[in-house]
Image (tube, rainbow, N blue to C red; front, side):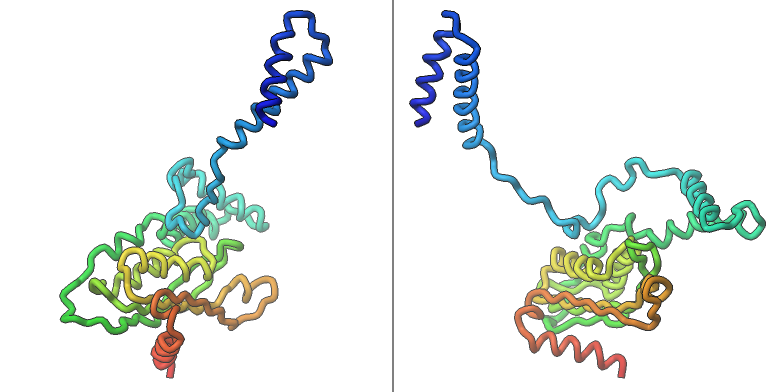
Length: 255
């Protein structure tokens, strides 16, 4: 059929100089379009799904268009006025500068590379290959929906293959992701992702339990509610007994 359309289109094109009327010209253009559309549909490459947001550990181009400290302080003064107070009164006069400085620490995780924290691996562990568990790691983060704090404890376990990392490094990984605008679910996955990609352990278990002040201070206003999230990879994902062992070791710390 394509060959017939092509032949007919060419014949119509050849008669254009012989006084083709407008109707015939429209038919010729339509046939050419059909032929070209068919050709393009064959050559169009398949669409590739974009990477999920969680695949990017550090947002792209953090520094691009970043406001100055003066602009950040001006924004704080605007919020103070919007809240109904006077940013020029004595108690609030230095608040914009204090808030900007505090944000530099509270959200310092954007400037840190979690991968680099795990690059130094200690291989001389005398053949140790059993579970390594660091539990009760305290953290403070901020909900990305309301910019209100949530805080709690993280517990990390892994089965080493090529070696172990310094125990403090796991705590620093937690801090790196906690000191960003977060959801607890994303933070739990990010911790597991970076350990898996760098250490390549036989199994990983991560549990995070936290209280969210956006739930305690606003909205439903229910204080003391705890949210628990987990990620199991490798041996911990494949073997329910390993999950039970991990949870038992974590819970024993609270008895």
